[in-house]
Image 1 (cartoon, rainbow, N blue to C red):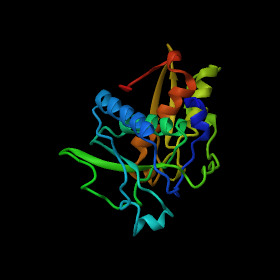
Image 2 (image 1 turned 180 degrees about the vertical axis):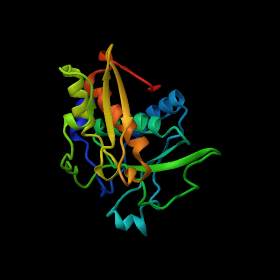
Image 3 (image 1 turned 60 degrees about the horizontal axis):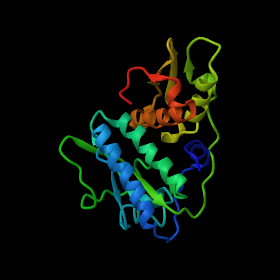
Image 4 (image 1 turned 60 degrees about the vertical axis):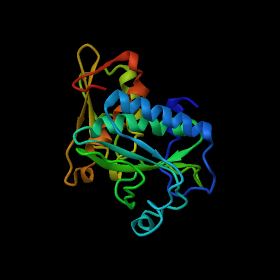
Amino acid sequence: MTLQEAIVARHSVRQYLDKPIEAEKIAQLQALIEQSNKAAGLHMQLVTDEPKAFAEGMAKYGRFSGIRNYIAMICKKGKDTALGYYGEQVVLLAQTLGLNTCWVGLTFSKQPDSYEVRDGEHLVCLVPVGYGATQGVQHPQKKKVEDVWEGAKPLPEWFVRGVEAALLAPTAVNQQLFRFVLHEGNKVEAKKTFSLTNGMGYAPIDLGIAMCHFEIGAGKENFNWKGHEE
């Protein structure tokens, strides 16, 4: 499965089978997490065989079950967009390995003994990972390509492919609070947009996730980001 295929196949999954993740797959996920942490100054951590975070209380509200493995999405404050960008790369790798995931912002119980949050950092969310009881379903898309882009027409095909891939990105309450601006010289700017709820504060990380999808769909060789390190 390619990354582009993984973008289409990936859906949020909340119920998981009692099936351990193979050691070689754990190793691949861990390798990309370590590489990404080093590249972007993040602190993502893969937690295995830890059932408490989604065992009781608020976890029931989200109808989660069977979760024993997850990625703790941790970064310095102000690095949330980078966390979304690199974190979604790990999520898509998991999909190519036949695993399922779900970005979870609120409905879990913190387990401070299972991961490290250093001074100046914050735990943004958890991403369960494992073998789903189902493959999940695609939520109806609220927006179309023309709703989330700015620039002069005609749009190049690579840009349209990028936006289409971004529209498949998971976002808080499916709000898709992002826009992509095409500038001269094939420079692309990714911007957060406004809503009354502001995506419950997750707009920066959602932007990073959307950027990851855009880059895969458009092809990194076709453009450069404007105003972002990624």
